[in-house]
Length: 281
Image (tube, rainbow, N blue to C red; front, side, top):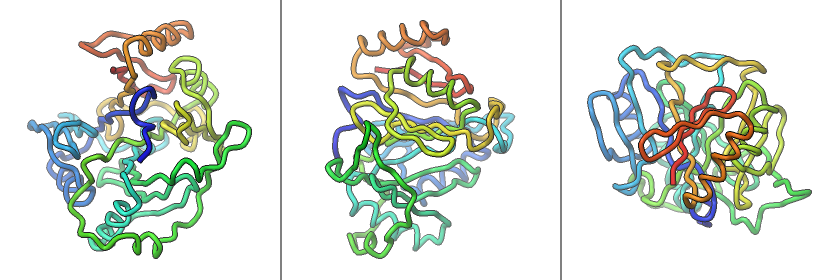
């Protein structure tokens, strides 16, 4: 696995989502997805793959409401597995569980798509080597082609034992209300580079990755933000390589009129669609 999720890049580190029932959500995220519990309270669980790094946090608000339709927020978060063999093992596991899923070949990657019991979207994928990606006019070629499941299954016959320890949060894909405003915020404010366009969507990255973040208006232009207590995204983190890089981005955010607030050892901002981002080092 190439180093697109470490220094000197800026990348998504952790995602925090609301669920309607923590116990049933935990059963799904452990038994179907393969996470381990790092920390747990009555209404919150922090999940890990290596026993020390938080990748996903589940919260059950007291007044939680079901996932709302036609709003901004989470389309999916994406777990990047280290190898194709790992994805092969996960695919066989999904087939054995009987849990419904989708699959696509994106040219740069092979991906499986699952929805948790509350409707939160999840992608589990592996990257093809960057030497196999095709770039033209500073944009990377991606597609949504059928996945060769037989070839993938033939890659490994190992037994499934949960997510590999070095799984990372590969990217996050968000619904936004205004694509132009979102692109300006993420490029001029947060310092990402546009690497691909798709109908009503834009893909952005740092360090030449195929995308750390994707933005779309597939829920409709002008889609409102969901209620804070509804199922879906609470926040996600962007991990900066150092304080200097984070400081530069905070200046850029203020220059475009975005709010940045200090909370403990991190800073918080919101994109124009109300998606909350924690800026961490």
